[in-house]
Image 1 (cartoon, rainbow, N blue to C red):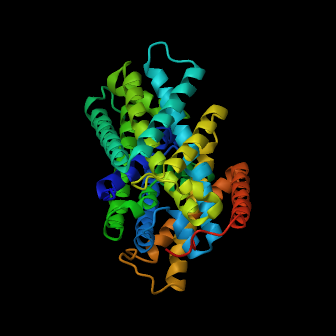
Image 2: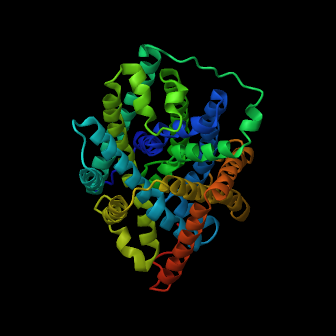
Image 3: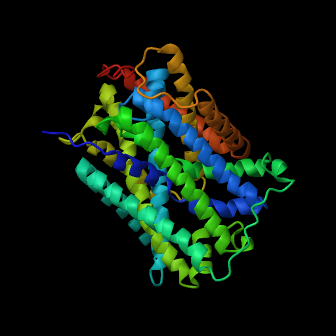
Length: 443
């Protein structure tokens, strides 16, 4: 039987859908509460995009050199030690994908409730969120063809709706705001302040997902050739969309109306369409969030599948269909997401999940230097453009962001350390519960 593979178009759809979620539709309100310079705010999104692009260019070398599905699980296991790869997969499963899946599903239920007459009860919101996770898990567990087609369609709708919203903001806003984007003399001080660093945390979370295609690289027909292009183009497109949509928000609604608010999309839509704008944007965001949950359901289980292939005690995670779709890993990750939906509201999980994923990717890109030193003869169909400057830019921006997480959210940092410690303990026990099925450091 001929194995179906993911096309570059589907891989790019996975990147875009993973990146564009709740972050870009909520971060601006928090930023405006502490930062009074529009130039500094737009630069937040430019800096975040620069970091993501540098990260994507660096991951392209890792993914082309180690084209096995699994993302950081594969990269860290090869660069450092199997334990590092296992813990990375553990983090991806418990926090990196399952928790954001739950958060986005809850947001989907909230927006769905907002556009229905009379709204819905909290219990019904949880039912809607769980139903979304279950339906998408069933679709992605069925076959790679259905999975890829579903993701491509949802992502195409997402791009079309965001583009339409941006155009509507600049063409239909009855009382547009003046966009004063000129730099101010105080901007350098603002951009070195703690509030600016905290705002960068939210931006960093909004850009999370630029590396998603590396989780399915082993299921692409020619990852060595296609992965670098897919990573760069997908990340570049999202960066442009993020800058434009924040300009659209600022153009359509007064700053005072958005300061400290979460529902930025609603507020901006009211400035564009009038009183019906809130419901229109609620419906649009609900459609966008389906794509995000879909992408996370597709990408995350591949790391779990790789763990199951490598560790005898976890072999059940590698169970797959005739096409190689990891249906049991999809069910496992979706089950964790459902647990989160039913047990928590996850107000703080956004920063926690974003910082853990950033730490994962930081270690992976440090691993790029490690692999060049330890394995100079490793086949590298693509080498990072601008090396070593490009990966160093990513590492610097990400390290600064993580320092602000530690300073402002010490509980989140301690929680991350606890999660890593539990992952290491689990790896130690798993390693001794039977022989490994293969050497995780070699493909």
